[in-house]
Image (cartoon, rainbow, N blue to C red; front, side, top):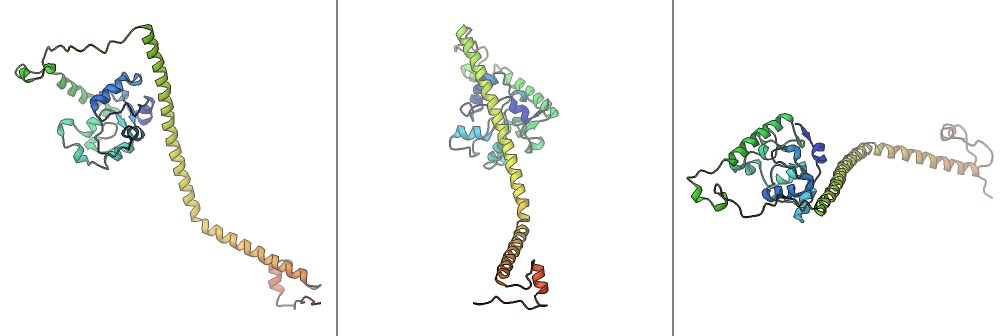
Length: 276
């Protein structure tokens, strides 16, 4: 399935409080969000798009790029740029057990771990990612061998039953059901508003960019426009001076235009104003 940035935006977004650099905590927070209760790290179609604003707010003092981003979600291009301000591709792939950048961030990296110029995933990339994740999850699900069972903590031993209560069973009381319904409606409305806000911000950035381009083009012709305006003002001042001179002359020829004045000036003497 091909996914583009607008598809990921439609999934909604999260709050800065729900984000976490620890992948396990982050995944738990995502699934606790009613909007992403169907989140599946093996299916990019269920992923949120994490923007720089969200991570900046989570860090309070702003994201510096030092912390490694949790995998299996999509990030805006500005987040990846901030990450690369502190890390190189070699730094991020030094630990081979974590996999390639494409296997961890398929919406932001392509083949040979090259950064994408867009946010999203092609249908072919999606199929390959899901295949790789299925193999990875199957390997993780294999039971530990009995040979090493004695060396494992109680929680990891085969057949160990956790005494912790099952928190996945939801309260079915009328009050609980109503609360979950209202929360889902509110979260849905909030996510729609946040998605609209991000789309509007993108449109504003494009308009600002276009406005700057127009100003740059206008600047090229500004000097020519200033020269034409100066010539017009000079002509107007000369005409005004001629009109003042005409008003002081008594009779005789009175030039009507600047051209008349200069063409006739040498052909006939101009009467001087009478001094009383």
